[in-house]
Length: 499
Image (tube, rainbow, N blue to C red; front, top):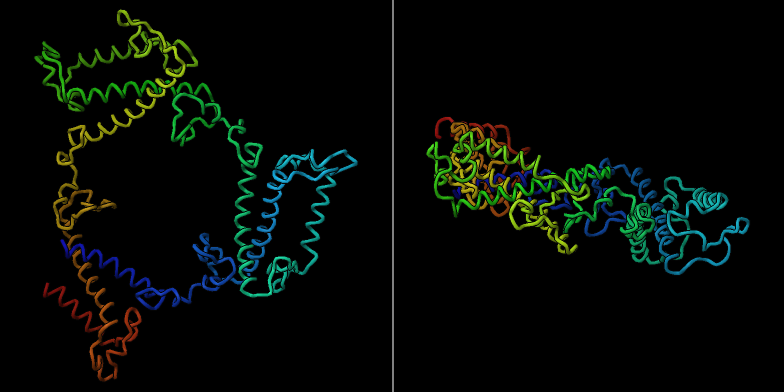
C-alpha cells in the first residue's frame, strides 16, 4: 500500500519538477529565473499590484507586444478617468444638491429639474449634448497622443495630483489606475441598477417590470433562496403556466410525502392478516420498497390505479382557480370524506400561509427523499443504502485491491475499470506500479545531486566529470550518446530478462 501511495505521489511530483525545470531551469521553480514568458515584459508596469500581480486572464498580452500594451494602457487610463468622473457625477447630486439657477434659460430648464442618473439623458437639451461632445473632443485632440509622447502615457500636463518625488509619483499613478478600475466596475453597476430600478442605489422594490416579480410573493417563496427558478421556467411571466406548475408541484409533493412514509412505516409496522386471501399473500410477505412491485398481484395494481384515478377525476375538484391545490377538503385533505370533518380552510391568514408554506417545503423535501430512496433501493435492495449490499457494480471486483485507501477509497473518476475487466485492471495496475517505481527513482535523482555527486569522471575519454552534469532536464544535453545507450540497454535488460 505504501509503495503504491508513494509511487502515485512521486508521479505527481516528477511531473511538477519537469514543468518547473522546463520553465525556470530549476526543479524548485524560482519565478525570477523564468525570463522567456512574454508576460515578463509587463510585470513591472504600473497597475501590477497585490494580491493579483500582473493579471491578464484573457491573455491580451500573451504575444508580448509592447506597442499594443501601451495602447491598451492608454485606453484603460482614459476609461478609468471618465468612470471616476461619472461615478462622482452620480453621487455628488445625492449629497451636495444641485447648482442653483438655470441649465438652459431659453428653455426655462433649471438644474433642479434634471433628475439624477440615466433619466437625465432625456432632459438635457440638444445644445447641452453638443457642448459636452465639443468639450470632450477638445480634450481628446488638443494634444499629440501618438506613440511615445507623454500624452500617450496619460500625462496631459495636469499636475495638481502629481509629485516631484519618483516614489510618491509612482504611488499616485498606481492609485489612479486602481481607483479607475474600481470606478469602471462601480459605474457599470450604477447603470445596471438605475436602468432596472430607476435609482443607482438599486432598490429592488422599485423594479416592477421584471416578469418574475409576478411570483415573488407566492406561496413557497422562502428563505434563504427566495423565489428560486434557476431553469427560468417562469421568466415569461405567464401566470397560467405558473399556476399549472404549482398545482403539479403540490400534487407531486403530496404523493412523495405518502411514498416516503410508505417506505419508513413498514420498517416498524405492517398490518396483520392477508393482503390477498385468494393468493394466500400476507401483508408480512410483501417486502419493503421496490421489491414489493413483484409481490403485489395484478388485481392490487388495478385497485390502486382505480383509486388514484377516481381521486384525481372525481374527488379532487378545484374550488379556486387562483389557489392551486385547494380542493375544498380542509386542513388535512379529509374534509367531507370522513364523518365529522368539514372541508374548511384555516381561517387565520398567517396560520394558513405558514401551513401552505410548510406543505410545499415538506413536499419538496419528500420528492428529494423518495428519489434518493428509490436510487439506494435499486442499487442495494434497501432504501437505507447499505453499500455492502450492492454487489452488482463491476467496481466491487476491485474495491479490495491494493491501493484502495482512505479518504478516497476506490477512485476511478474516468471509469477505466467500469467494465469490470479483471485482466485490464491487472495490466493497468502493473503499469501503475512500474511508473510509480521509476518516478520515485526520478524524484530521488532530482533531489540527491543538490546535496551529493560522485567524484571523478563520468566519461574519461570525453573528460566529462560527474560535477559537470547539471541537475534536471539540462543533463539531457550533457550525457554522451554512449551513456544513453547504456541507460536504454540497462532498462531493456531489466524489463525483458530480470523482471
